[in-house]
Length: 212
Image (cartoon, rainbow, N blue to C red; front, side, top):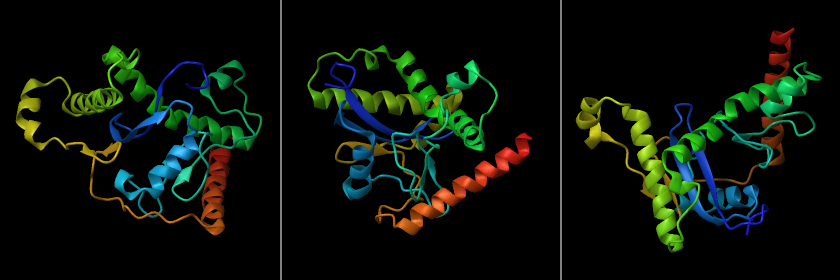
């Protein structure tokens, strides 16, 4: 049972700016906290989480910690785009950063939205066994990626179908493997975390300067 009072499956997903899923961990109960799922994905090598290369990072929402490889928003300021529509003026440099962060990170919501609109079963899952439900979700994600990459040109689809990256299943996850990420994760040190916070502050200051 999730926090909204109904049964659901929690999915940890990563997507790129082409709205393609690059990783998904499926099968946690809806009540599980986002950070708990992420930490399990990072620690369990069999789940094959695609760790960002050195110097790169994922944009994450406030449900996740800011640490090495993961940049979240400032929690003390407005974040979601609808909040800025109600009152457009920025109240602080942190809000300027959060606005741009949210604008970029919202690609994951749009990706899920397109996927759910295309396959309605994702919005109201039939009561199949859990293993079957997970396979349905995997299949929908894989088909979503296929359509995004191939577009509507049937000739392109036929010519490239054998070259499509196949999802590689882990224990409960899959990844669209590009061979670039390391499967070894080390617990971030306080210095690592502070470095990511410093990078975030630098980006914030640059955005604030541009906005003047």
